Image 1 (tube, protein in one colour):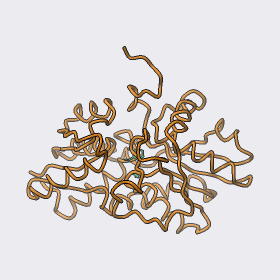
Image 2: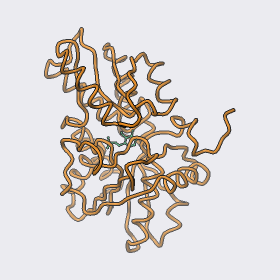
Image 3: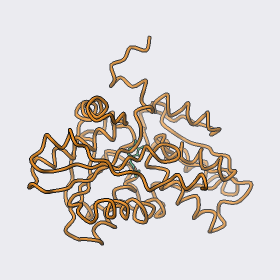
Length: 301
Ligand code: PMP
């Protein structure tokens, strides 16, 4: 087996205890922390890099450059190692210590940008560098690259349909680039237009749900299509934190904050649905990426 085959085909797990809070509605989740570099972003990173190689844009001598809240950067770092390319990542300085450490350990060069400018500051800085030196870099530009959402159209959406034997009634997930939501939702709608797709966002521009974007107050991802969601949902940081902790302590799923946000939003949705509904959401990454985060209430001193 090729190392890159460790991307995709993640298990779909039933959140039994969480679902028991609902009336005949079940919540299932894609265990994306099982991917090669440990997050959902492996799918998009692999697709963007392979397309770059196919189109002759990523070739020996080039460095992979992009902005990332961490997970895409880690995916590039790991895939860069596999494929033999150096990697340079721009990320807001307030990204978790674990993410920065993993990036450095995998050999990526890090450029930290202002936390006040969040993902937009990192995006603009990477764009400026990539555009200033086009022959030096391959810039996948994850916010505007169709290979990002198509990775989910070609894998995540297909897997969910097959793993639920076509029984999925709702798909709900948060958005960073919106690649996971866009590609999965488009594929599921093609299988069955009655499947309802719900896009989740933090309820405020100042939030702690790392990896997700408050779209109204930030630069809009190029392929984000606001006509695609049947519904929008908002989640606040405290609810995401609380659910992240409960997932660890009740379901044995030690996952990241955006996963907690997704499950909290899935529960909110489930309260309004008829018995028999089957909601699928995404566990984007593992809790190991947030060990130093205040949410755990652990004193590291
Ligand atoms: N959760 C986490 C932890 C992430 O890092 C990301 C990607 N930034 C997402 C969710 C959202 O994924 P996407 O870019 O596909 O919208």
